Amino acid sequence: MLAVGEPTHGSEPLLRQRNDLFRSLVERHGYRTIAIESDCLMGLIVDEYVAGGAGTLDDVMKRGFSHEWGAFEGNRELVQWMREHNTSRDAAARIRFAGFDGPLEITAAASPREALTGLRSACASALPPSPPLPSAQELDDLLGADERWTNPAAMMDPSQSIGRTTEALRLRVLADEMAGLVEAWTPQLGADVDRARLYARTALGLLRYHYAMADTSPHRIERLLGVRDSMMAANLLALAERGPTLANGQNAHFQRHKSSMRMGGRQVEWWSAGAIADVHLGTAYGFLAGAAGTIRAHGVEVPPPDTVEGSLYALSLPEGRFVGRVPETPGAARVSPWFGYAPLDPSHLGDVDGIVFVKDA
Image (cartoon, rainbow, N blue to C red; front, side, top):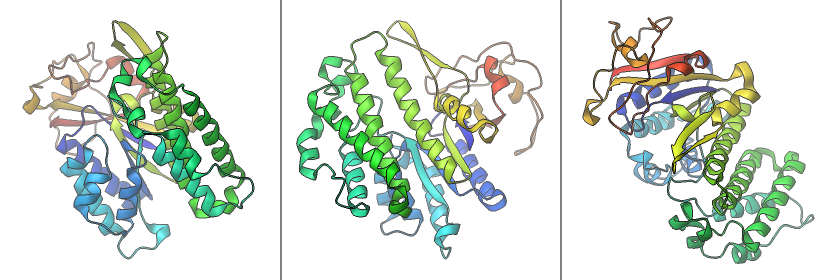
């Protein structure tokens, strides 16, 4: 698992650099999967398309990405190249696409309906009548209207969440039972087992997330952040089991240090997906942090020389040139005038395996 972080979302030079890296890893090093910080269930749409499935590129870019990532030209170019690469290749040689985020947004969490019904269908199509599965009607009755789950008011007001209702707790038991069946009947599920496990992880993760949304304790926010990153980590670890994978997302989701931020006047801490993956994968996990010198369209100008970005910006190197180390030990963290850019923390340099630096993004 090679995780390549980015300091901001949507920078086309950074996305194209990622695409070039993935092509090189595929052609020279046998990589077969790229995973980006997007909804893992939506990612199934893209994966089917790049394997030669029906549909149009426009539709796939609209329905296959969360957080509006489908609007970025770099992501469109990636999907186009993957489909072209897979043309005339058999299934074993095709490259794959995945989202590693849960079905979560900043302001809301998805209903677990898609994950639960997908999990039930995967089990029903491959398993014998006994042990019995919950009926589709039972799941539908317990789920109720999706609007109850996606209510944005629940993000800040735990009393608005339905995550600890009798129905939600019953769904959590049923999801756990079906996840257990997937593991117990893995040989019979055959090629469908990866998708069944994805549905199981996502259903249980979403139900945990909604349960945490209903929490009234002071630790509610870090629980939510921790559940999200643990869902990301589970998806990344499943992809790593399948073979060499390039993961791309915000630096903070890949770092080995404990994550922290101030919210609501207090400091909250949790472990990132990368920190969790690193424990499981050890030397099979690599993290390249992303950084940029300038993003002038957003007012991010030449960085001060005593920062990580400043040390790299001062180098006169042709594009694509590698350096062995940051020239001088930076003493300060960069302060960005734009909230969308997250500077590198110089105290974290010892725990990154390299820096991917774009001088002018």
